[in-house]
Image (tube, rainbow, N blue to C red):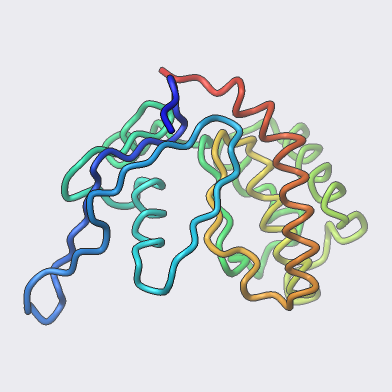
Length: 205
């Protein structure tokens, strides 16, 4: 599939790592090419060691390809890392909440880094907690929340900065199946309600 302005484009991307014992190289990604268009929700499936995490890190700009080109919103995520402030949201397998911060303060973190106006940022953070069913838990600390509730806080934190792209690194795999199923459905609903609008108007500069 080709798109005039894909949100993500890999062209013949390979990534090679030097083995830590010095015994040659390890080919993690081999001549990978694909495009993701605006508004698409894409799942990457594969067995352990097939290169999923490497591809994820290439999109996030955490490493550069050995060969080939990676373009995200028309820019090189590794060489133009600062360009992507607030443009990419990440939800990890574990919630990665700061234990000394309340649920509200955890959601506020990205907005504070972006120096958003404090009252507006607080309203946005509270709104996302409410949309994820956490009204009344704004002042709870992570240790007082269930695993599913903590992951909801993590999702709220990612959505709060209004990113153009959301990267999810197996965000529901550590939860029990019933909780994971409900959160998956809720996540897709939120992306369709908010992400479609955001992606349709994402600038390609």
